[in-house]
Amino acid sequence: MNFNRSILSGLFWVGISVVLSRMFLFVSQLAMGILLEPKEFGAFAAVFGVSSFVAGLRNGGLQPYFIKHALVGSRAEPSYINYSRVFNICGGIFIVVGAMTLYRDEPLKWVMGWIIGVAFALSVPGLRLRAQLASGLKFRALGLVEMLLSAVKSLSAVGFALLGFGAVSIALPLLLVPLVEILIGTRQVRKAPAFKFERDWKPKLFRIFTRTRWLIVSSFVVSIVLFGDYFFLGVLVDAETLGIYFFGCQLASAFANLFAQAFQSVLMPSLRQIEGEVALEEEFHRILTFACMTIGYGCMALLLVSPYAIVLFWGDKWVAAIPVAQVALASLIVRLQVPIFYSLLESQGRWKGKARLQIIDAITLVIFVIIGGYLGTLQSIIACVFSQRILAGIFIVFLTMRQMDFRYGVVIKEYFMLIGVGVLFSAAFVFLGDFGLSEQRSLLLAAYRIALFSIIFTAVYGVFKGRDIIVLLKLVKRKFIK
Image 1 (cartoon, rainbow, N blue to C red):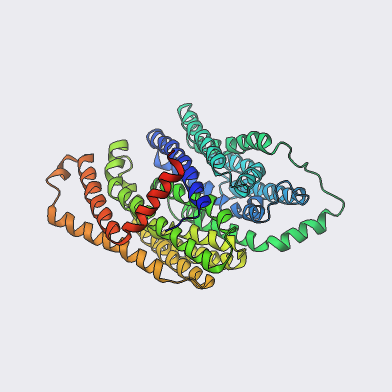
Image 2 (image 1 turned 120 degrees about the horizontal axis):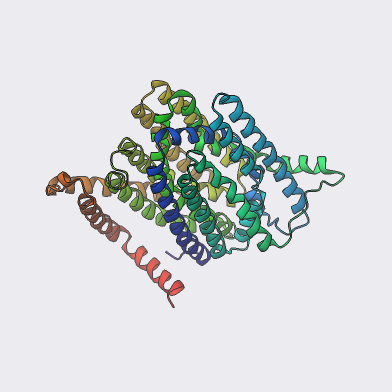
């Protein structure tokens, strides 16, 4: 299990920073869950859903293109930056107009639409900053940037809520993030290209569009996959139901973003440097084994503890969000592998193949969301949305392996191991019982379940992956412990 050292180093530094970032976000959601009501979360989710239709226009989807072709500091960079600015300005205008049109009788949503739209238009410096750091494999600096932005976003949201801004306090931090990116980016990149078009700017922008059109399609459809459910449910269900669904999804996505951000920040720039199909496949299989192990343990452990944590932190206020969070976490065991496979396709410049997979994912999600929303209950929404998440995730994983002509055996083996851990844990818990801890409605039962699950998980992976884990731990010690 000889990991590529740049990948391991990148995952370590980005992983540390992302863990700290999620701590900020958890504190923020803890406070916001106390200060705000489900209807207020629902109001924000509805407007946020409108932005999903233009999120793919952010920077023209250029970030992976910037990284792959090392555009930061090149002669071609000003043209690409101007191209990105045009897309961001158009996208911001669309968000504002869309919110004002759909919610003409709700001034609160107008205000949030304006905030999200302006933040969208200002996001170009974030593209340049992340592309430069990732291209230079400066993962430690990239992690510090993400941690700082997360702290600004999380702590400011709590501050605005305490000042009485209500639902708007969720939106206002989105405006602060690009402003901080501008400050950091100016210091990091030193000099930003001027917003000035050359005489032949139209042909240049058209050529850029031709080269990156599949990136735009890909970015557009992935934004629908990530946030489109909020838009459609905002039209089909009441604000309180949407607020509960949104809150539960945010609890799960805080963990999801931890892994997705860590892997995506590191894998695309690292995998593109590996030469040879055999070496690439072997390295990717090692990464996949490591990812499945960490993702599987994290999702299952949080699934077990989430009901008790929600009751402990918020009492009965968000009890209705428990099934949303649990089913979302179960689906993430599959869905969190998808960004890893997309990073593989991006590293090989397979923009069209990635876009096709995402189009299928987006279309099926919209269909399932509409069915769940039309039925009108929280249970129908959970059943429809997360069934699609799991089935589409499996489809994407295996179709990507087929595109790359990689062996399926590694994925199948990892799935069976995770299923086996779940079955063994369920059987052990039924056999041993809960020792009467459920009556206390405390974290003691959660701690017992986590301990039992950890023992079974460690035993299974120790038997089947023991040698690989030992090699990985030795490499981590040699790399990071002086």
